[in-house]
Image (tube, rainbow, N blue to C red; front, top):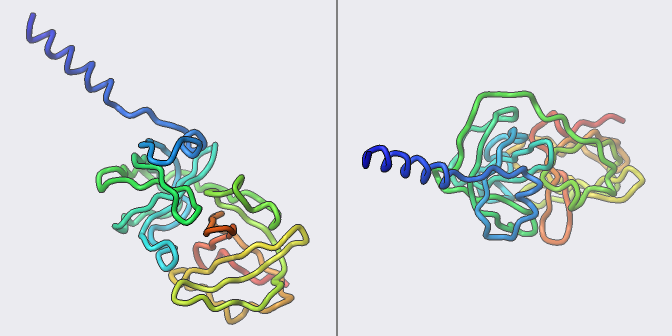
Length: 210
């Protein structure tokens, strides 16, 4: 009888200790410093933004929203990989992020890719932050060298200007980008200090179309 009670008590304790899984939107709305658990699909490769994010993390998205997961170690995550993350909500130069401990990321099998959300350049902001977005816009200023972090490409589709930030790890050749050219851009909707950005993930995410 005592053994049964001990087992039941232990099981109840384990169930109580299991972290509740939030949607990404719910997690984003909680106070900074809160420990959260989210599940979703990776939308960026590990470490592709390292030159400006200073880590080897990746972005995660579910049906409700997206968020960036900061990790010191390159976990080899590729877009489409399922993941469950437990970590602390933080603010990284304006960008809402989750910082997990070494054991806080559980990777699952590959699932369906997250389709980029179509946006106008002028609407890239807090409402899109954390998601993968896409659009077509004209380059309106000369490409700005911001090495060793990357390059800034200023684009506008007529609704307002936004920065496309090309991190050095993406391998994107900015030499072919010039004022007046139209580009198709896909990328992570990000924020740095007081401005919002689209951060392409690789050479296929920033293509000259006209």
